[in-house]
Length: 332
Image (cartoon, rainbow, N blue to C red; front, side, top):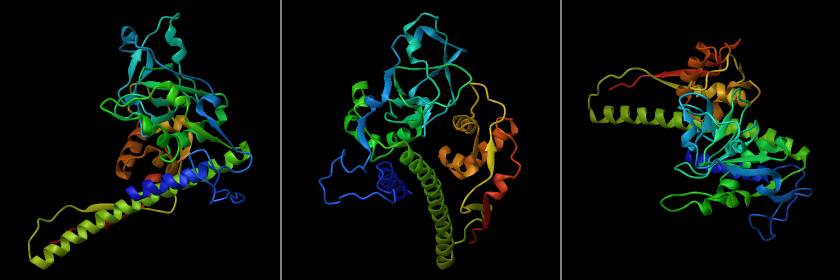
């Protein structure tokens, strides 16, 4: 699985630089650095060049913390490079306060700049409540919101923005300042190229998620067969174990999932939150990939959110049609 992650980083890095476009021709013998080798019509810009502003929360929020109110986005609310409110915090601000500048809008980018998960980046979905960022999170507002998804892919890529920021993240208390964030180099393509690249990236995302799951499932199966073989050769008796279900993914999961009733701010609803970020609808495969967890955890969470009405009951059951189940028994 770790090799899949490395391969994903390389392929995504090439995609985001336009190298994999069929008509692209680049001189592979030309000197190479982090701001070279872009196709014709592309430009290198800094993140600061393409944003309205980059800011973070002030230190004076503690006096506004409440048990209910507007959402308060902390570094721990950005998981798996997505905004997920599992244990949310709340604030209530006076109308005239400096903190209003940190009110997030749909399409903003959020980057953790201090803490254990420094460098994680998420996009802000459509929210039916106000939310503000803490001092540990940078709010990045792009001039052109249509670039949000492309820039997000670049920011989370080990060979892109994340790799660039890694040089600044070190020591006992790793952190970033806003000047470092603004200096991130961004490859900016023409809009037509950007749309084609995003389509390819979404397909690659699904492909890599399937490959990673397949490797993990094969490892589990190999471990069970190895244990059974050793037991048979040595004559060592083992206690019978319950059936183990190894789920093997089909080539693609196509069942559509749609947002139902919006959960409350305090509800643990990561899948509904992801759907809200994508206009309320997504196929099950894309949702699973963006969720980023194990397939069994995804199943359990999906069933829970469907049962609570946060996600509509699908017309075809993705839990049945999306995967085949192979039953394997361990024997002595």
